[in-house]
Length: 420
Image (cartoon, rainbow, N blue to C red):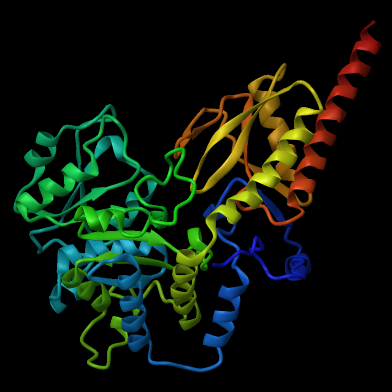
């Protein structure tokens, strides 16, 4: 059983960032793409160094890596892609073009094709649906922002339907993934699940699902045809993703990948060429998946809880704040800080000061109260997620926040004295 709390190699100090003049970010928000996604455990780095030592045929590597991932997820087949976004695009392309070289070569031009529509519930819309339309598919929205009913999905199915999408965790007013799959099976329409963090299972955001030892292949077991995932959630490079599901569709994805573009037959010019992967990242993903299955998740989260308790004790001591625990989930161990006596604008400025410092500190904040997963802030609160903090980062966060609060309190006291 892997027991290490460490997520990066000892001695890492960001020297090359400093040479470039790039500020370090203390990640108190989670595995987000815009701040780098993931930190590689030492096992992953070692695997990438080893993979770097020699060359291989990429097609063979992809085939063998796919078999390993399929075994780990319990799926018929799997394929490594350039991130989860690429996995979705290639999945849609597979549903449209199949193994037809002519169609593969024409994408994203679908003007002469029949099956080009992808059905998606309007209440589950998200910005990454661009991955669907990027390959020439037409998104067909059913229901409205308030919800959707099964009969609305069925009414949208026609001879033009290539696939249906589902985006976890869904919502109470949406048609559940089980029903979507049932409808898909009934009409012979493949269902694509875009679940970047599927390693945690379908209950990724559900409080209490904090030890995701059994998260593999939930959606595949339910009958989804393709499940698209991201590697960053398990410590692999954030540039790598994977898709698993029905072998016939995975075979099409392989044909349309960057490896398919370089096929010796020279018949294909697929879109997947734009998302090329190196051999090191493919090996890293497989190692990361295997590592995750053997990881002591209780120890992993115990380390996070130690950081959480320390930060809560330090921040509450400054006064004028209310601390509320956020229910744990697979990628969230954190708490909400409500800035009592501060307006939304003042809280926004406070968070901005955290961002503008050196190192920059990124916390979860949205003054409009948007829900991310199942976490929501108010205009005068922010959430600290410790799951991606490196050892020692909790002290940096505590010192910066308490310092800013003291400066603010001192400034208020001086202002009252001047006005007296």
